[in-house]
Length: 317
Image (cartoon, rainbow, N blue to C red):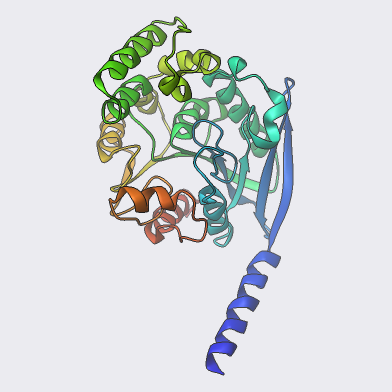
């Protein structure tokens, strides 16, 4: 009987939380295509902080799900953590991805600069909305770079880098691929990386390397390899929070420390056991990969604690 009462109480609480949060689709007309997103807005008589959540690389959608990697709902769950603590959020499908596919259907036309311009446009839209207070840009993985580059022009109140690299991405790819490829393919991979870093495309891509270096994605990689994440992070004038999990198989703690060195006044949160999709998962390859496809796994508790504490510190005393 007690268990049934407890279950009923939890159900009622969950229903109350959802009823006190406005859930709405939200769109942005960029002038070169419409982008689609989701708004979570806690009911409040006063403006609330708003977090613009920017997803990671490739076909990763607003919820943190990737057609190549599986459904884990990491960014969706994070948005609800914020909403339950009176913080609004907007997460969106990048141009060329999911509901925003039509904005740039051909990936040959994608670029970091276009993603940054879109983030800036979302930021301006949110800053002009009287329901919102301080604007915080939160980027996950490659989205951390986009957030860093967009923040100055929208005069964001703060930036949160979640699993963001400090090194130019070509260096990260070299390291990742060196652990996976046989010598001959690694040599060809390095040649492709050198060519793209120099700003030149190369159509001679062996089948095993097509996923990373297919000709249609090379223009985007050229725009990405031009960026220096640590240098961009160092230029930020607003408060910043760096979050990195110790069990992230895609981005290491070393990158978080490099970002901290680039901007010493940034807050650094190293979360023991957290992986790239924000769950506490052992350093076991099978369990790591399984977590990318398990939306029921809870987010690391410390993740919410650190983000909420950081945002709370931005509010006027």
